[in-house]
Image (cartoon, rainbow, N blue to C red; front, side, top):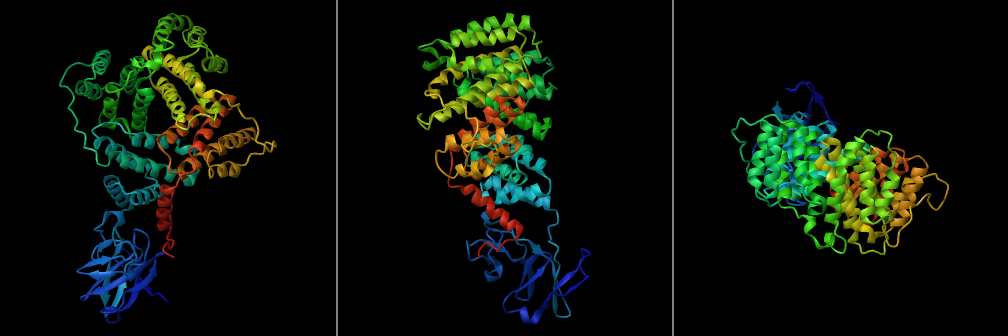
Length: 583
């Protein structure tokens, strides 16, 4: 039986371990206190107390070996400083240590850990996990920080780390982190730390072995006009001049340009050419602003320049053969763009009741580009807003995934993905900073959807109800399809069944679970986030359901995987909970 007495310096009860004479020179003594097991060692007359569970995988440290003040765990050879618990091997994390004292020949331990500031501890481990690219440490830190409600500091640390430690600029890891932060509210509670863990893991992977970025100072200038910075930035991006563009961007932020003015400047440059870098340019630029939303505008000057290398180095699709032959799409886009000025002036975006999403999307999907681009211009003339026009193009792009036939090569899913995520980024950018220049992106997106038409031959129909036909909806049946390869159409049917039964929120959360338990790649994270947010815009309209069905098909096509990332997370969670993993 454990004996306690209220004599701790922290005001709690110390725990009696036993006579010093029995422990000194013998086996270590293990006691239970405060919901944990503590091992007490006596070496050369000095008394030490550590958590008995190895922080790496939970093996009992009481079965370890001590030599020269180093405690070695025999399971994975992790080594720790006996006096403080710090690890010599970063993969293992530190052991919690405790104060001990000897009174009248008896050993007593204070069950309150020496390091009482748990948020500071987990933020420090987060830094180490990012720097060393150690998944288990990242998983443990995110579980600890999430439990403390410290998601904000976590995102801030990761955002700054990811931008400062990658000279090549914005990474897919930062996009994944941002996408997961955007979708946290719709995920199941138990999946939210998983989502952050996945984001952190990809940020660490994207920066591993990369050289750091070195900031350029803003200009020392009296210039304050946003239109001047806008002109400078676009000129430098046109000539692929990265350093001048960076100084322009940093200066605009430093002199007090508003977030909308800075976004307008960047988005204009990201649509100065057609469908830049198969859509990645605008997508990454939009994600950079969304990440700043999460961590605060005070970090804009640190984060936003990271996407300059991607804008400057982007492929310009008007130069690509597929955009010129057999149909000269850049010429058709230019003609439609010229007509768009008069259409917008006439319509004035005044028709708040415009409801032509479905009809226009069908034209974008099936008609020749001259017809569909004319349809976009006429919708603007009818008063449709640029936001709704961009949402319509995003919906049309999502339908390519709904109608995608598995007779296509597997790699063709990437083509669907590029167009949809570009169109969704355009939609979000239009909501943030609408402009005449950004409106060109609506035409670029519509033309890209046209180019993807071969992926819907033959055209897979939109499912209505699952095969049981009762409209009840069963999330378990849907998730079970992710355990087998290429259950694309079956998953779509279960998704439609859940929607028909009114379980939209359950479907969204279930797709999140399916995404996060896999070793998902960049495209899967993008598709999930874009589908969830676009479906939210359409609400209960059929278009929202179609978007989610398309996402379900895409995600299932890329499942199952080995699920190694989930295994690491599960290990971290069980360690946090106190499970005896080694048994």
